[in-house]
Length: 200
Image (cartoon, rainbow, N blue to C red; front, side, top):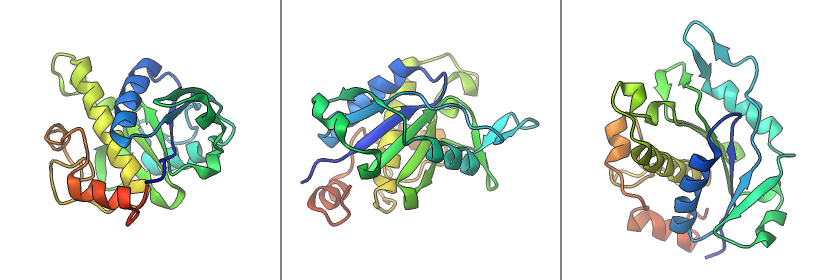
């Protein structure tokens, strides 16, 4: 299997330590390094002030247009030579934000994807226990983030949705969907990815 090329980019004031820990776990699952890049600025013109949310489609489109010059700050799970891989050669780029995102068909989303451009964005807002008026649980939140990152990476790289609810590539409609997933891809999905049938 050829090495996967994945970039992870925090957005604005997103906790970089949280992103890095999740990226570390993702790198171990993929067996490939993750390129952590400097933070991208918050998109302008995507906020719905009445809803206190950002339109996910416009949010990701704006970020996609600004990602090219963002330099690598750390290579996670590999040596520094991986930092020289150009952004255009990435199999997947994942933005991570703490801002709340929505679409026309939803009140809010955990992630939004653009497979055509091999990019996606994960929002941690609804992955937080505090959002649901429960006691904060940073460990659970980071595990959820890691699972959503695995889902985005696979989907924007060409993998179809998985019908196995334990696989990270299965849909994440509500929080229990995320919590019920394993921290690795199911064997059939991993086989497809690693043999090149739907190569990441």
